Image (cartoon, rainbow, N blue to C red; front, side, top):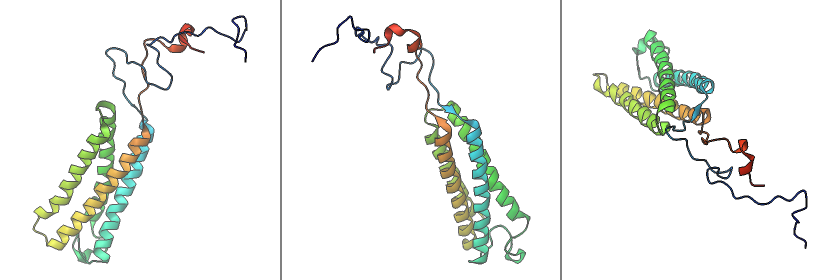
Length: 192
């Protein structure tokens, strides 16, 4: 076994790595005064939010139809208005879609400006869903209508929260580490 000779053109003298330039697999030191922020792919986030709005609207419609057809319980309109109800059914469906769009906007703002945006978003959606579930019980409607409306609101809240949570995970990239200077800019610090 022969050791490489210093005269060998492929041999380089080992250099000690500068501690300012960590191994490529480890994050580097941040620049003073700058906090690395995650990158948000707005196009992907908002397209996922639009798809979530469609799912929320369809969940509202399915919930209304199931309650009226299977259980004969009116949610938003008197039962004599038929399975599709009146304009209030359409308003409920569009309100569910609007809630999903508003939640996407909140998620985008949280991703741009808060630490752990997923945690804050989970709490916001969870508490908003709880309000939507409890609110029907403040009316004078029969208990069956209150319960049916609460279940539909819970389904919509769960759909919006879970879908946008997945969209956010896909549309957010971890921050790139900041360096005082690019390691490749100074070849003396590269260990080969």
